[in-house]
Length: 315
Image (cartoon, rainbow, N blue to C red; front, side, top):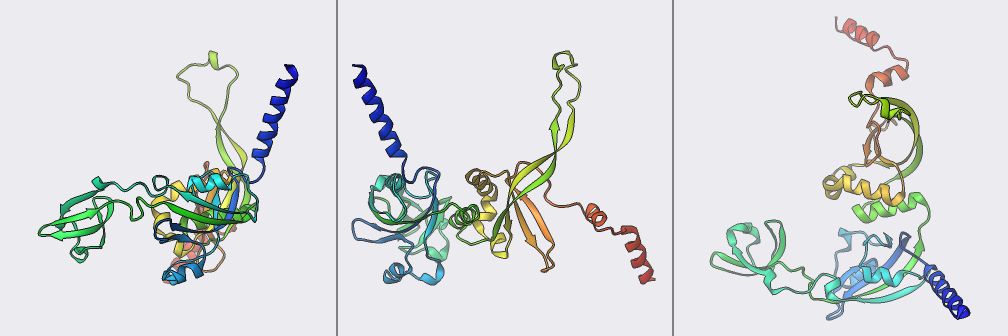
């Protein structure tokens, strides 16, 4: 009996080790894929520019190429992720994602009648895509002062077939950061990592806490700590990016977690002179930029002398 139990344990251990082989949750990979609806073969998404062109997609309006994803972070449908687990670079796969797990089942109740006054005049025609009270839909019909609007996702009720190939496992940290940013913002940015030593206020823990007056103010001390920092070079495209403007804090939080770093600094170069203007994002503390007076002191510049020279020139 004992031997049978030991055999069962060994088999379970072997199964666990086998399951742990290959790509797993948290790994960063580059995928090439094409997704189409099962019924009708409508193109849903692709990383292949030629495939998009063949389907009449305007390829000048978007970039194509392998997508970087973090497994387990819902960057792709869970059914596709599950199929990738345990596989290796170079492996291919084909997965059919049921409608309920893709863009949802079609819901007749999501087809509703609304006043046409809620629709901009230029969009009052069948087929127009409209946003009404925070919901996106397309107009089916307009009769009199009423419009029939379908608020279902355009692909609701459609099973989706994914063909994919695992091109690469991304292990370089900068390449990981660039790939994740590309996935989130659909743009390429220059990034780099540095370990910075910064001053930080920390609470002083007293050994005689029980004897101290409860109303006494806590004591703090300034200590130097190392911060693992991701620097992102700011560009005009970044500052105008809608996703960045609306969700920079959430994006920064995701990056700090996925890359296991302490903080993010977005650094802007002004006038090509090499002077950075850093701004803290998603960090664990610290200042967003150097104080002007401190900067003048570091440069050994006397601010009062500069003012006297300017006033003398004006006279």
